[in-house]
Length: 308
Length: 308
Image (tube, rainbow over all chains, first blue to last red; front, side, top):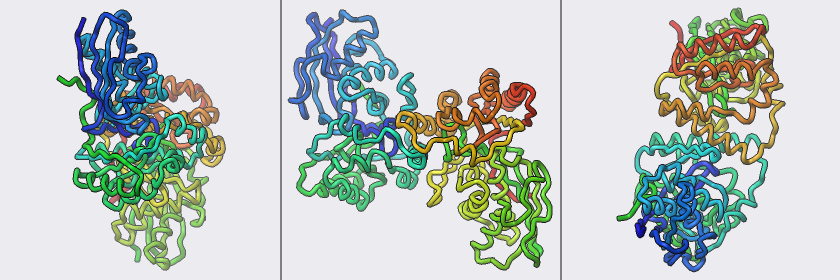
């Protein structure tokens, strides 16, 4: 007992343009930190600090990190092993940067390290999916990227089949988050259930080309293929001044720009840190009075990890 | 005048499982050969030999190779340059091995070489698309693979944007063609215009994973991702004993098996020539009395080329 572990899990861009529910991209330098300490009492969340801390549920049955930690322990037959948890949120709630996924991943890995286990990526993703499903839905794209780092491709959720795509070259991400709330479920309700052939074939071609472009370092192909015909046109209206923000990103050299996950965070992809910083700045300005936070990070090769 | 050129263009697997209208794969050792000789008279097709020769239109306005050759010349302002053409068909008409595409590509490249030009892939694809459009529709997947060889990804047809995906490792293809006629247009009519989100997202994930698997030589990922939920289930009924043929391919170690283009050719992918030969043989047997021709070839790195 009394083993404890602290884990950081990175924020992630879900969808990554055309790759709806399929692609995820881990962003360095921003994420959620969860500490799990085994103890004799019932499972409890002792403290939540950081962004939107006041809105994070303290009940272990409604908190994605605690649900994922519990799922990980239960999955190993350790129903009687109990924990207390603290969370430090770097990611906003419902910001579109994979906040609930990162919390779930961090919760599951912290539980694993607290019982001194090296959890496999598959075991972590499974436990994290239980946490994510409870708060937003059974989506694996953000979870996969937060566990594995880099660019991930969810080939199948059930059964779970995730491909990590090694990136070629340097890629930077600018994330700009206006102070607007969008619930994942509400954003999903805007999307039609059925879609025309010409449209999904185009989306499929863009997604396959985008993966190949990242894997080969083909920046121009990223520029040509990072287009989302499905979610972006329908969700753009939820983000005030989205068109202007996107235009600003392209004007300053972004390789691509779209909504991160279900928004309201807008991400831009860039070839260098200076391009990314400049993009973040002009995008923020393009929100014209709507307060917006910004983060610039390298696409992170590293996924969730224990902090020592 | 009187310059002449003979060109071979390989047969191709269109769609390649999930990659509907997007992926194409060139197969070595089988294709169409076209000779163009400049002359003073009107454009004329002098002879057509080979498979289904009797059904190939002799009118230059209805023959895909002649239409493509004409389109190539016209595109260079050479309306007054006339040709006579001979064709030798290795590919069946409406067989699902990209026969009209190969003829179009060979016609365009033969015209280019006859006027002593090195045509760019884009110029060839554009001219070939005119030929292909006239006989089956504006589909670029077979054309791209026949021009470039290997695995190709059509990111966009209009404007034209094609990615050649370098393959890692050795890949072999078994093609088995039962004596059943399927017209591309009829096969298209079976396909619904709109499709559900869960389905196209799955198809997109498989296509992106398949491209990555070929590029990295990941055979097991090919096996997991070469699944077509769109065309294959709807077109399978057009191919007698398709389920048995597919099962036979998997039983003898195929990495994947589906309908080539709009059929009736069934292709199987294998890791070695001996596996591919064995697959071809058991697939042929599984057609159980329906006469079926077979071809086994390596995935060809080489696209259309002049023969000397």
